[in-house]
Length: 209
Image (cartoon, rainbow, N blue to C red; front, side, top):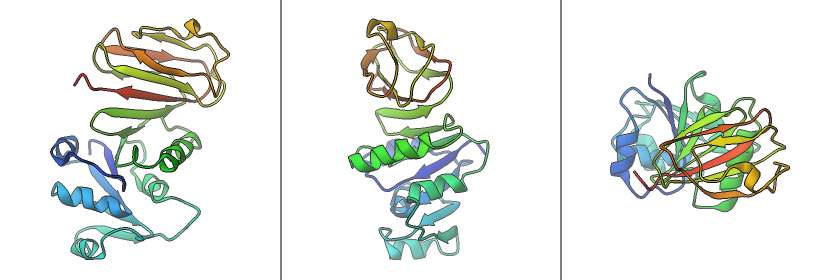
């Protein structure tokens, strides 16, 4: 197994690109109507989970004997939360179809990751952007000229960067929710984000690819 892939319900407009991201050995989980994405690329989901309020029932029936189908109508958890909970432990998780369509869903997803003990192995992905909620230092692999956003969600201590045009102390601290690190720029092909404690949302617009 290479990684876990979760397909959520927001639109994905390039299935050729998506098909290149999902490997044959990946563990695939569809969150409700995210099933349409794996169907579009001819993939085989391991698990399909949700309250099934938005999935095409005819399409769902096609996978009845091929995948594990889990009806979970718990309204205190989103379908994405249910999918993450079913992912193999200790594996990186890439999530597609989980950002950019509705602001409430976007912010809800950040809160889901923020509530986890260790969300650092989870990446929200679209064709041109990745977003991560991290609680420990991390690296960003990209290209010179890519844009990076750094947003503390809690108080962040001893915050430093390498490989970005603007260091955090250019704007000054304290580095807490409301500190705006938008529109930073990569000046190397790899950026390092280091901090001692806290939680950060990191966005990477990878249009250089």
